[in-house]
Amino acid sequence: MAVNAFYFLREATTSMRRNMALTVAAVMVTSLSLVLLGFVGMVVHAGDGLATNLKYRVDEIRVFLKDEVTAEERDSLERFIKKMPEVKSVRFISKEEALEEFKEMYKDSPDIIEQIEGNPLPAEFKVRMKDPKYNKAVAQRLMNRPEISVDENGKKEIKFPEDVVNKVLKWTGAIQKIGFVVVVAFAIVAVSLVSITIRMAIYARRNEIGIMKLVGATNWFIRWPFIVEGVFEGITGAIVGIIVAIMIHSWLMTKVEAAAEANLISTGYLVLLSFLLILVGMIIGALGSNFALRRYIEV
Image (cartoon, rainbow, N blue to C red; front, side, top):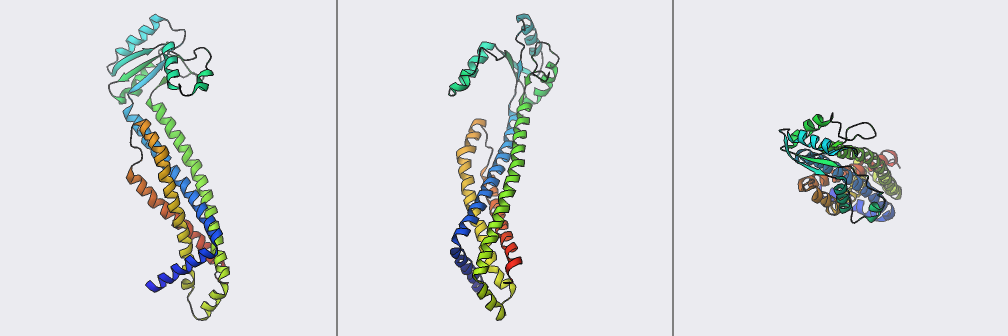
């Protein structure tokens, strides 16, 4: 058995060297599809973690006021909010202070600041809760207050973590759907390229295959070197995909984690993702080999 395994491996590597250009192309496309799969997997996982993190950590809602609200109306609203037992603190931010905070936030992007005409930002109350679980209940109580501004859809402009969570989940869901389509498309191309590579290998060894059949070699003995070749190409593509995925995590995801002050992608998840990429790479290689062998092994 060990002798056969060595023979299969030797024949596979020899075949790959003979068709180096196609082998490299198959590995590259497989790598690209698996890089995309790894990226989509990390983004969706990080998005879910970020949404959960925001949901349970953020204990503040923002209540935006109409521009025409008087000082008396503003004070009335502030007293109304402070009477709520769930509220920990209330901070008023005037239009001028809101503009200054905006400029400070985007001080490294002067183009954005230059586009602002006048002061379009509203005054607001930042309301801190004793516990984040009260966010929605307090926001609901404020919905009928006339001092609060409304958006173009007639909805009260009260922002709290659920809005952010929903947006994060919406974007990660969209990335997941689009990414799935792109990954499947590249996977199909990768399977096709692996299949073409195996066809070329079969064609190059057609006389040898014919002789092997004449001396009684079984179909599986003839097939195995080609299957090993396809799987090896898939695994090589997966290794490249894992390396790039780790680089993406180090370069991009760590910045997201730092901004969110949370560990969104654990080492355990990266290990699991690596195993998944290797498994998918092997499946791509095996499928490509199988498609070629079913049609062309009778040469």
